[in-house]
Image (cartoon, rainbow, N blue to C red; front, side, top):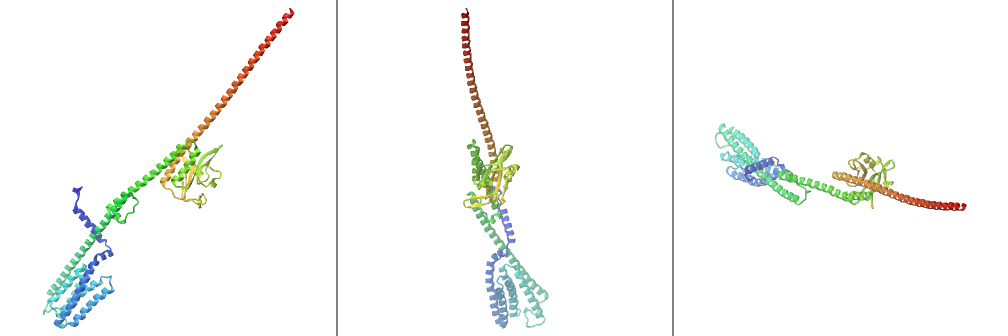
Length: 490
């Protein structure tokens, strides 16, 4: 990885980012960047124009031009200070200052009766304006210089002795054009320097802003990562992180961890709930009533519901109905007979359709949740068919003030399948026990009948023996009588 690291490209990328940031600077940001420089330039330029005014008074000693020095110079200072006082938030005073520097140049030329060296103050003024780093300030200066040079030169050459442009006896048009061209070039050069300095100031400021923003993002990323590592996946993130690539990666990681954590909690919720229901089924395998009561009580408490009831399918002769076999905090007045006909109401309809009914808008008066403080309608009702993949055995109805999440509805569907299988098994076991008991009872009855028949047979045999004995005795008596009768005849 170290061999692929290229500092030059990183620097180029940073410069590219800063260039884009410079183009997106707001007016407030630009003002904040240039305000210190502007204050410094204002202080410097104030000294400069006061020095111009004093220099004008100094020049007045040579040709007795006091009125011009004080009048024109005073008006220049007044226009500058008045503009700055009336428009403190505007940069108009800087453009007035540019024109004032040109007027001071014209004043000096006039005071010295066209002394050629006084024309150099155009270059002085143009150079002074660079400090504002605004190339546009060169425009009023060069315009005023062109107007002054053209008008004063023209009037002087017309023979006006009170107007001074040069001390030369004559300046041809070619020399005048070179004179003006050089003034224009120096103003253009100064404008270019001002523009370059402005760009550099903006670049340095945006570099600083970018570095500060990056440092801020790094600190935010570190704090955000520390919160994630400590297990606080619900930590809020700043808007700045969304613009940072590392921040985006951290947010994505946090979101993935949060989703995984939520999924894990939901799976744990379902697993623990299924375990509790499984324990209820094992502990009450021999009693359907106890199983139903423990089941509905556990489900209501575990899910944080407010009340619930379990209806199981039963029959009377050929008619079938749903019977309320267990309930928790339920309004029994709603089910005085504890039975609902198939297809009647939402519970009966759920049995027919074999689908979960989940409502977040409960009909008025459908059911109420009561406590010692009063009664109120629930915010949601869920009715779940108790069924396996092949057979439905009942319906469970739950009410709560809190809406349910999708994973909770999935949990209800899973436990309904488990309890349905257990109910079918329990009923099959009870049916087998009942048949076994009937069989045992029939066996005992048959044994009693056999014993009675045996006793009857024994009594019959005894009777037969007694009759046979009596018959033998009778025959013996009869034979003896016959013998005696025969002997008597002899």
